[in-house]
Length: 178
Image (cartoon, rainbow, N blue to C red; front, side):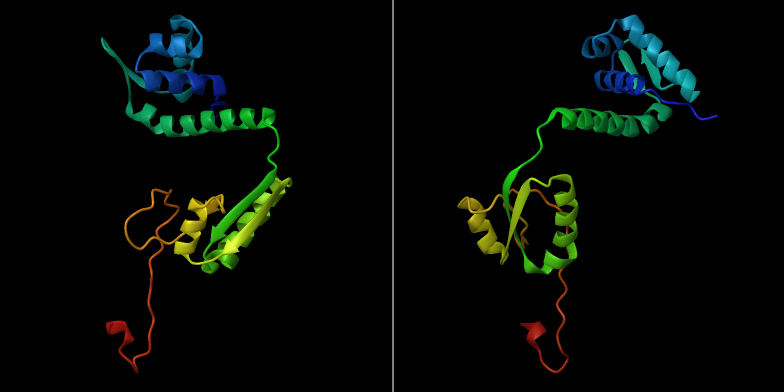
């Protein structure tokens, strides 16, 4: 039978893993140290294995605890995000996006369709242009978001993906050698 994981246990597990100490985790979680110890004992019983190696300087994750921590963090983060979305006002207003034409059909149309379903009060305008003019428009405050190709260096923006460039030419001329 699969264990039914309690989000409160996972939240406490993450706190213990991040602090490396039951007492500091208890302070972070607003519980007593004994309550945190009991919760971790319950979680270890459910998992059927030790999640922490206990030592004089605190605790460290066991191999099994290391396997659980990534999913526990994702679950806690998703729960926090969901709770925040329940009290957040709906998004609204205008968002101006700049993007190279190469991505307009393949990526943007799907992304905007999904975005519009989730945020119907947001009006999105799209500007198709080359990367250098998109960067200038972003700097001038004419765009809120720009997707650009960066050939050299970095503008300091967030890298969304690495897209290898492929040049195709005819064998009848030598343009590719230039």
